[in-house]
Image 1: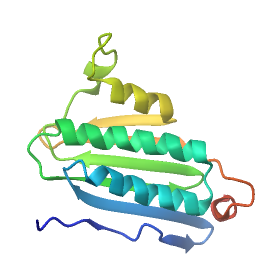
Image 2 (image 1 turned 90 degrees about the vertical axis):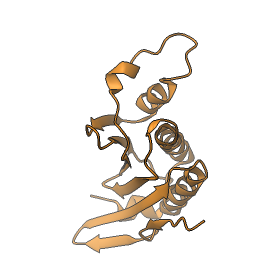
Image 3 (image 1 turned 30 degrees about the horizontal axis):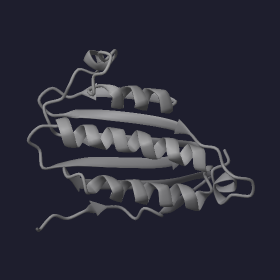
Length: 162
């Protein structure tokens, strides 16, 4: 009880000169129920812009893996932050926790049959770029980037033109 979802309007599209950007930013409780919420908000935004279904599916799986890792491994923090922005035909997702951090190099090659480390491999396989930043004693940041493809005639194709 008393948990709140805080964030910006997920459908906000700004026009500033020639730049259009759609942004979602939420601070979420470290609870498995938060994952479908952010996934649905981001997918709704991408769907509205006309992003192709396969690209949306890849983004959904990357986001799910990053958020699930925070929920399972972030330590004693009560919340985490997810921000996602769409600009220049690129979706950039940042998942930020306030736990103890981790060494992503330790998960490069999981043991055969091991459960741990598969999420990292999935994120690396689906994203065009993955960056991990360990903030000693203050958590970690996972940054995922994915190039967007739009359906013919989609609003995003026109609005996100550079």
